[in-house]
Amino acid sequence: MKEFLKNKWFKFSLAALTYLLMTIWIGNFWLVLGLPILFDVYISKKVHWAFWKKRGVKKQGFIVEWVDALIFAVVAATLIRMFFIEAYTIPTSSMEKSMLVGDYLFVSKLSYGPKVPNTPLSFPFAHHTMPGTQSTKSYSELIQWPYHRLAGFGEVERNDVVVFNFPAGDTIWVGHENPDYHSYIRRYGQEFKADDMSKGRLLQSDEAYKNMARKFMKQRYDIRSRPVDKRENYIKRCVGLPGDTLISKDGQLFVNGKAQAAIEDMQYNYIVKTDGSSINPRKLDELGIALADRGKRGSSEYEMPLTQEKVEALKKLNNIVSITRVLYPVGMYEEVFPFNRDYSWNRDNFGPLVLPKKGVTVSLDKKTLPLYERVIRAYEGNELAVKSDGIYINGKLANSYTFKMDYYWMMGDNRHMSADSRYWGYVPEDHIVGKASFVWLSLDKDKSFLSKIRWNRILKGIE
Image (cartoon, rainbow, N blue to C red):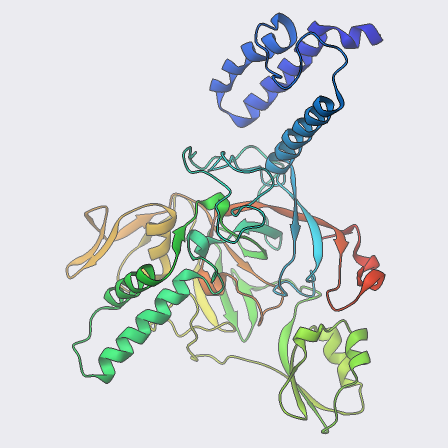
């Protein structure tokens, strides 16, 4: 049996079968042309593929064996990371308390099917920037592949915790990526418009002011673009699927007319008033309220993100006078999607909003265009122009548009402290990376040494 397993024909057959199965999975049958290489590696051995080894020598030196093991490890780890599972860290509080800052988790690529990389030429284990640098690209755009997703176990389901490429990260101001570039464009555009108004100049269109802002930023800052697979990874909960109708009333989300199912650890911001004394820090530690979340406003008032359970616990303290949830009322305009004064939306009250779905056609006019402008132009690659006689797509007058992809709506469980779809819109299907599976390690940045480890979260599944 041992001799059979060492047989070169057995090894070749096993490698060829695995390679063919991968080819079928990937769906690119040009890869079949790689079979002759496998045949030469295992059978004919005409080409010395392992050039770092001495040919015909059975016992290799220590360095050669080390290089051999390193190459195998890098290739294996890269394939696993690309097609099967990838590690991810929670950097912000946007998903608290469902997930905590300092959680290290694994993301399953197989849940929805792994994406074939848009930029296959890249440095191993680096995302978009070379290790030890702040702006050096870790990838080459010499080869760029179109969006293609391999078969997976299923599709994105409502309330899944999903990792995706940041949609608004297509263009960046290097070193100033939060808020995103498009937020800066809107801000500078508004400043240029306000300057013209204050000086009595003739006002221009909002698009003209945005173009002024783009030119202004390009002249002064390092502005770059990123392909889809090299944009920042974000993690949020998928609350809306393609075709869903969403509306939020006083922070309660309704999907297709039904209230969103309760999420146990969802947080909102609350104003906590005391009798003038401070809340005992040890009590806040016990409740798991991070130091960064203890926003004190004067001597007797705090603003803190809290779950309903923590609200009830704080009410039991003797020095608490009142706890009131922060609410952005109906009609109060906030700079949220679709960033248009015709929509008086804010983080607590927005909608109704119908999510774009592949193959569905919507009517276009100046009222509906802000809802779909970025989809048409940025995500689906069309030329779009608004003229006096109507809307033009790729040079043709258009009063409707049919979507080419599915789109999702992502929100953080920390509802008042999450930069999510409310602030940049839909997440296209080609940006979906995978499903958050389980936490393998969790470290509390406010603690030290072994007390940093949150033992109760290790190997915890994500819901």
